[in-house]
Image 1 (cartoon, protein in one colour):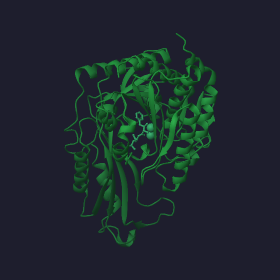
Image 2 (image 1 turned 180 degrees about the vertical axis):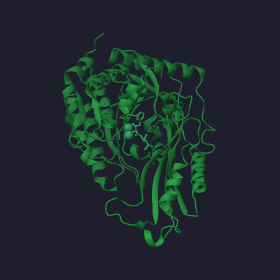
Image 3 (image 1 turned 90 degrees about the vertical axis):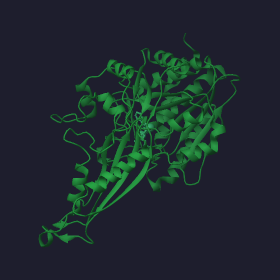
Image 4 (image 1 turned 90 degrees about the horizontal axis):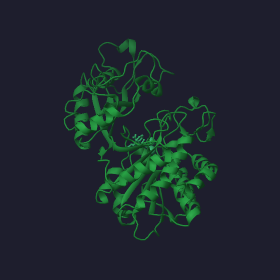
Length: 463
Ligand code: BES
Ligand code: MN
Ligand code: MN
């Protein structure tokens, strides 16, 4: 049944690419305190694109101290379900400039059918996917088969610190029957995927100090404790010889996979060589972690610990010194049913105990949010499966994700356990959070069609 709205996506795909490009030119880096104006400009640009798509009551929503959200709605489908559509307009910092093949904030189409820019797939394409579906329906039929409320967040990449406050303020306004996100991954290119579990996160900042000032390493080296060595010992103690987390009690609350889930995951396509190649793992480097767990289980259903930053003294300008202090940031991924506060306490305790020689250790918990899981069944999931398989011409995979989206859990809960449908856009080679981030345009078009079908499929489900 070729809907006119589907035809519209086909005919106007070029215009949607232009919208995406113009949003991607704005360096909306939420982690950069100097980018406040760009965040504002980005939220304004998203608001304008919402108006252009035909949404109503479009506005930039501000909370004191928070980065701006954009909001728009279309609520004329009487008696039909209401969808809360979500994406985020903030992006990661671009990383090492010399590693970008094209400028990060000048979206560039390459010969491989991918569009390159920072935030292009995470998550500006997610914004435009929602806008395209809305526009395609409105332009061809003058209405939508469902009610929609589109919320585009401005601080997802820095932990969504104002989520509770935002929810408190706007709960009535945002109330919905179903939540639809376009901020997760497809398991492989061309394979439409619905994500039913996310990991949570807990980040820590560690500082080790031992000296008032740097010392001549020859005059003092030997009896004097080196805080960088101390930091190295602390970090080394976070994993065991298999490369699995070695924090006492960390696994106590991990919910094991059910037999059913284990069987479903085992059926998903997986090829170790492809996985290694997609990740860019160099020859001879082993995959690590707990024995007896598959790669997907380690990624989606087991906690992990990563050193995301480490500094003591730069190589450039270094000299024969014992440096006075060292700093690191640690990121712990959590899974259901791990309690973020308990996990943070275990980490702090571990780090303090691992510090040798009486060096001073200061540990700060930067923020945390729990993992999320749902049962991917029921009318909304069935509708989404039909819609995506129509869009892609291929059966849908139900998958987990290693990444985190703090928004999902609290909002699904606030709306009485509303189903949350997480539609994939990223793919294994998209380089989200890395240099040369890119979007697979072919799959993007299929996702837009999936989103168009989704409104039709959800319209016939009960409110
Ligand atoms: N879109 C990602 C999360 C994601 C990626 C989920 C792939 C599923 C599959 C999101 O933008 C992200 O990066 N989130 C942060 C959250 C953190 C700052 C709380 C993350 O996971 O590091
Ligand atoms: Mn994202
Ligand atoms: Mn991200």
